[in-house]
Image 1 (spheres, helix red, strand yellow):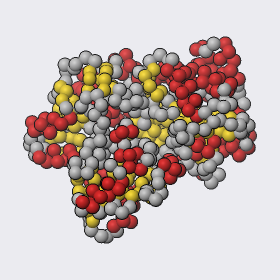
Image 2: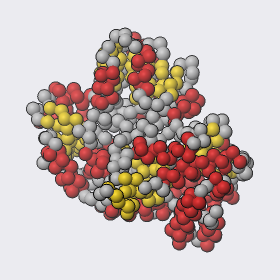
Image 3: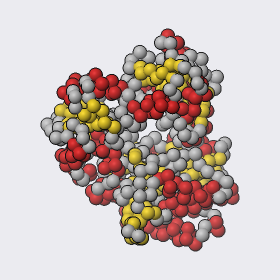
Image 4: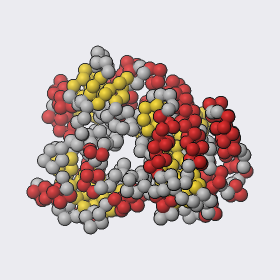
Length: 575
């Protein structure tokens, strides 16, 4: 379907606008390119965005991460890009219709209950029309996938224990059952993974768990290594039949991740609805001892691969392209034990491409490295025992004083948050400001979050924990994994970002019966000293950097050969 065909269909169904999200029925999870309606309709490939299409106009709503990318990838004659913070969809609808009455269609399979209900409260003058299939059907590709166990040696808790714990919560919250629609929750709960996506081992399925611990799994094209005997597996289309057995009973669901379509299933079967936060999300975020041990081991292997890559890059940065870098880094990582895939498409962004926050090279955009600019390299891997995500900004040739000054500001921002102790109960919103302060003091900022949660052989971007100006108010808790990744971007010139993964740990401080927490760094890779103006660092910041580099050398050097150790010793020598 083209934009023109969509607009014709909107007119045919007598709608004034239509809302299109990037999601499929697994809301907030990753999608394949062939499932992405924003890519098909506009050419925009970013990982977040919303389209509002009227019979005559099309608006693409994106946050600051995609301001440059959205403009590059779309036809300005067909699509108007709107970039900003907050609820852009509400702002757009408000400008389009103000106090007018209008009908706005939406795909009820790909829009969450909460999102639509918020719009209904904001705009009592608008009629939001649930479209189940007339214009857009469920956009799952339908390809079969292999489903496999995430073994106990990696996940640490068997699924019967997880099911028992969660089913108790279901009963305690007055529900007869709970419908889990978030693919990462279902994957974690049942210790199952699949190859449905190239970089994320999610099992794309729904699960209905009752208070007595019985589980029914709903998914299409699921090929199991071993057929399960402790739960049933049914096609997604059977969900409505299974719900009939809960007539006049109570089912809980998460309004943030459950498609609006499910409300009609509950209503048809006279099921009492109870809106409850997905019980698996927070449990999944707080890693158990086996997961922590595996995640640390995965970061050791990842660090070795990165050191070998950086040695290679130092020798081959002339006439090397961004795509060469993507492939070479993949090759080094793939040799590591327990490697499964990359954790997302590698961002290898040279010079001006680095200012595009989530740039990924293509055959059309692929740049060759030349002297005197910066390479922003954001990458990660999925290992059976852990997920990694790291960004390093590297000098290619001789960096300018301006580049070094801005890099050092970003480093100061990174150190400020990575070294911060905080009281138990602190949210990511509060911590975000600590990272931004060194940049704000110089009149600079970055248009993305400061940190996202990270799963264990699951989503590299995991909720509910995160750190940002618009982030969750959920308190950070011990053994959550997050990224720390401030940045600075100069459009048309370069981008800078420094990212390490960290684990929330107890700090040993206490005051007035309140414990304090801090971050323990997981990522092991030197920070490019060529880009650091040490005279801009305080003694405390310099000490942090030298201590970090000492730890990198001590942990990685036993895993390297003599020549690699020599290279790392120099890269980690004190400033």
